Image (tube, rainbow, N blue to C red):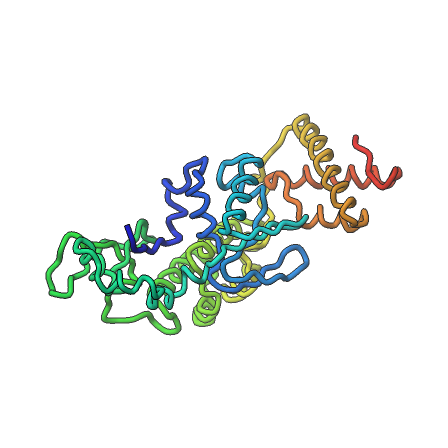
Length: 350
C-alpha cells in the first residue's frame, strides 16, 4: 500500500488517542505530533533556547506520564529509535531534546511534488486499482480528517466530472471547504479566524479587539498552542488577581497574548486550593526532602556548586504541582541541613 494521509494534531485530544498505556506505534506518532513544524524559541528556566524544526523539548518524567510507561520502557524505546536512525536524543540535567531525523523530507511539499527518480516509472504507470487514489491526490482539497475541530461539519467534495462518489466523501473543516468569502482581515485563514473568535468569546475584558486580532495573527497558534492558551485563560479567569476589585487588573487581551499569559502561574482563591491533611503533609515533605537531596547531590557531582544546584531545583524541578508548599518545605529542609554543615561535598539525608 502506498500514499500518505494528513493527520490533524487535534486527534491528540480524542479519547481513542489518549488511552494508556501507549503502544510503540502510538508513541512514535506522538513524537511526530510534538515536533515543531517551524523553528521556535522557548524560555527554559532563565535561558532562552532555540528549538529547530522537527525537534522539541521534553523530559523523561513528562513522557512517562504522557504514555503511561515505566522509565525503563521509555529509555529502551528511545534508544531503539535512536539506534534505528529515527531520532536523535540529547539529555542533560535540565531537559531532554528529541529531533526527528529527516523531518523535512517527509513534511516539505516539494518532496511530494518531486518524487525520487527511481519511483517515477511507478508513478507514471500506476496499478489499475490505485487510479482512484491518484485522481484524489491531484485535488489538494480532498484531505482525510480523522477528527475535526469544533465547528467542522461533513462536506462532500465533488469529483472532477461533477458527480459525487462514495470514495470522494471527506470531512472538511471550515478552512478547507470552498467558500465565497475568505477570512476577514487580518486573518490568513478561516480556521485562525474561528480560533480567535472562540478566544474572544471567553476573554472577560473585551477591549481593543483589532489589536488583539493582529497579535493573534502574529502568534499564529496551531491546535496544540490554542488548547494551551484556552487552558491558561481558564486558570486566569478564576485567579485572585483577575477577580480582585471586579476585574480591574485583568490585562487587555493583546497585552495578555503578547506576554504569553497562558504560561503564568496564578494564585487560586482559598476555596479552590487543594487541601492536604497535616500528617500527610509531613509524610510527603519527608519524601520530597529525600528526593531533592538526591537530585542536589547528582547536580553537584556534575560540577555545580551548592548554590547553583539549589537554584536549578527551585526554578526547574517540578514536584507535586498541586501542592507547591511541599516543595517549598523540602527545599527549606535542605537549606537548613546545608547551614548545619556539608561533609565531603554532599548534603546529609534526614
